[in-house]
Amino acid sequence: MKILALNHKMNINNNEIDNYISEFGAIKFNSISCIVCPSLIYLEKFKKINCLIGSQNVGMMNNGALTGEVSASQLNSLGVNYSIVGHSERRTLLNETDEMINKKISLLLENNIKPILCVGETKEEYDNNKTLEVIQKELLNGLNNINFDNIIIAYEPIWSIGTGLVPTNNEIENVISSIKKIIKDNFNKDAIVLYGGSVNENNITELENINIVDGYLVGGASLKIDSIKKMVQVMEENDYA
Ligand code: PGA
Image 1 (cartoon, protein in one colour):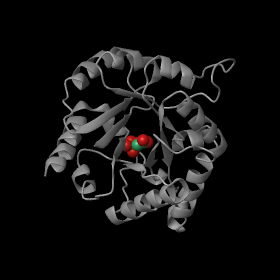
Image 2 (cartoon, protein in one colour):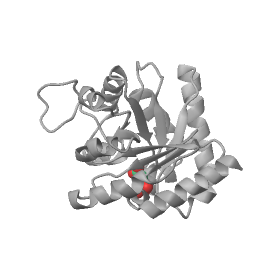
Image 3 (cartoon, helix red, strand yellow):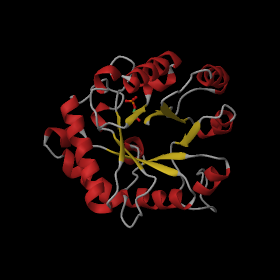
Image 4 (cartoon, protein in one colour):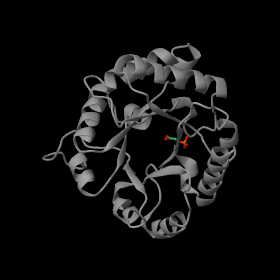
């Protein structure tokens, strides 16, 4: 079953969320699975419409003195199913390291929350043909000593996030098959791999031609209900085709 994961990032104000939720709650997901990752303050509200919910981040300790953070155990107690971890915005703007990400992944798994681990290269790394090298490093460091199970990987080229720039289908296919091979070779598991970076209702038809993509992680377009509906429609039509 393909996955459509929605990453709201730090968007939607309190006076807008109820409307979003009532429209979102009316969308039917027949053959795809949709995971919504709103700001933490709205998780409880999304629970009421009975969808899969994810956090955008998790604290680095299991409970205790870490002001401003929310732990995997707290997320679990709220019924959260997934958590994005290692998003490039956190890596670059908040200096999150592979070691921190590794710790977060193990806390999430201990608390029965499925991590969605984001990996991806900068424009400079892309231009210098370093993509696979960077991704291999992020995967192996982030997953160091982890029992790979119930983990989703999201390939998100940093230069593609929020820019409208998307790699070619061949490029995406090449990276995703390399990710699957790295996971197979190192953990003997079949990885679920999403593509993320400027996915929207206009380019998803083209992206759907990549057979090995298991779904998408969508930022900007996840804020518009009409865009979500169109993406769901394209993914489901493709599924039945
Ligand atoms: P975007 O963001 O769809 O706005 O490019 C994707 C992401 O950062 O997860």
